[in-house]
Image 1 (cartoon, rainbow, N blue to C red):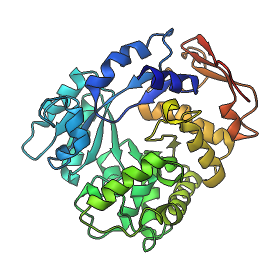
Image 2 (image 1 turned 90 degrees about the vertical axis):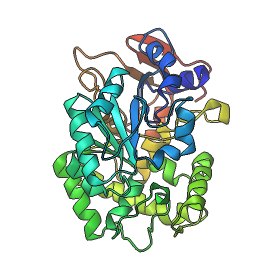
Image 3 (image 1 turned 90 degrees about the horizontal axis):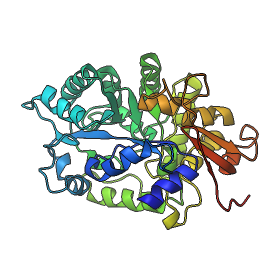
Image 4 (image 1 turned 180 degrees about the vertical axis):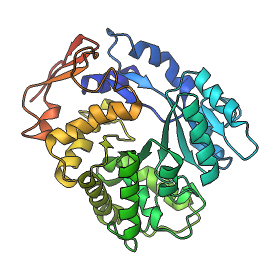
Length: 355
């Protein structure tokens, strides 16, 4: 973990929004990340919320660390009989920044959870499809950040699939990216000023071996057959995702850069995947280089809810900066040419930088 967090910081990342729900593992590193002289990003973590079926997911079982999955402040199963105020308070008590609503909740429960979490001062993050809740129903419920453009395809489904296990099986062939359903959804998002955490990289990059392996596992376990096999998805799905993200950007929706896969020097990555994300924003989704940088700085800080102190260069804000050798407004790949990272006013010069 020390290697991973140092890799992130030296790659230009000073804050991380973690939505994996493994708080016991993260906590020792959270306090260190807020110390200026420790080369870790700050970590803002969440309570992962879903229905009972989601708590059977092997990842959730692992993150429970021997507790009952769904019965802790960092992993919470919600049903119609749950004391929701008490459940949210247990998340507040362990210091989460927000809740991550994952899956297996209907629209009425989504509304109730969202209202209570806001009442108790938490940010509201969610997958952009909470099966069986549709993306538009999430917007109506008051979700503040929707993750994954890819899941917008389910807005066009009637009926909506009930199981989150089909989320990688979206039919991108028969549900057009510019259909009236998708257009109406984007207009709703714009009007509600919801942030889109697009995560185009993890769904579209052919070199994301870990992601493709992960998708394959869930496609094969889903009860509904996939319309796209693992070889087809980059060809069929990626353009759909790029097109919808481009349309969202042109409409003026706030889009933040996120990855779902940080990257790792131990797996051969030279830089965190956030650089690939913003490069795709520019090359495939119609962003200017400065707009892409804004998605990873100002808008990302808004998504976390820390924009009062971070995300832009202004008097009174914390000095988090990346100093580059070349101008990224001319070439977005210049964000990789890092001379130094400044976290809370402390300089971290990059060792053995190769241009």
